Amino acid sequence: MAETTPTMAEVMAELAELEDPKAREVNERHGDDHGVNLGKLRALAKRLKTQQELARRLWETDDTAARLLALLICRPKAFGRDELDVMVRETRAPKVHDWLVNYVVKKSPHSEDLRLSWSADPDPVVASASWALTTERVAKRPEGLDLAGLLDVVEAEMKDAPDRLQWAMNHCLAQIGIEHAEHRVRAIDIGERLEVLKDYPTSPGCTSPFAPIWITEMVRRQHG
Image (cartoon, rainbow, N blue to C red; front, side):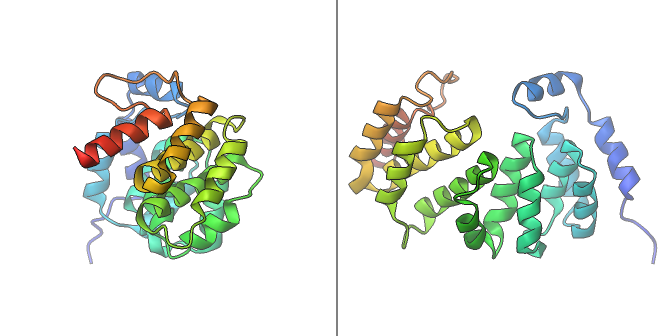
């Protein structure tokens, strides 16, 4: 059978060609060490289609652009629980972490197990992954979650949490306020008192991540 799938070297060469110094400059301001336009990266992934073995090899390069591509062409359910645990722990670029949690871990049969095991992790980046998974459940499957208890934790810990963990906790706070009317007043009150992300620069037409504004705006849209 003729070999039609591109080799690892060809894919890495194509990624190198997508490198744009201006894009790198912007990304590095957000802590992401890559210079690839994500639209072009997605187009490349679409052409490659799902290739789990290639995805694993791209991941092993430890290159941010290669890892982002890996997350787009992998088969999320093919990763084992411990494998995902290691991947989250070794991920430092924010965009890779974000895609890994959202595109892979959330679709994994191990997501709930990992959510619980990461919740009290001393590494704030790992703990932030747990909060992201909790936020997903708040929105889609809240049954069995202690929402009041989550608000207690946010109230006690969000103000002094490191950036990525604080961002994830704030998202969960907002989601509880948006989705669960019985907790809305308390969620807004916590946001008002802690003032987390109150002064976050927000582009015109975008909703502020400051929880009281975010909650109020999303509820208004739902009932508008």
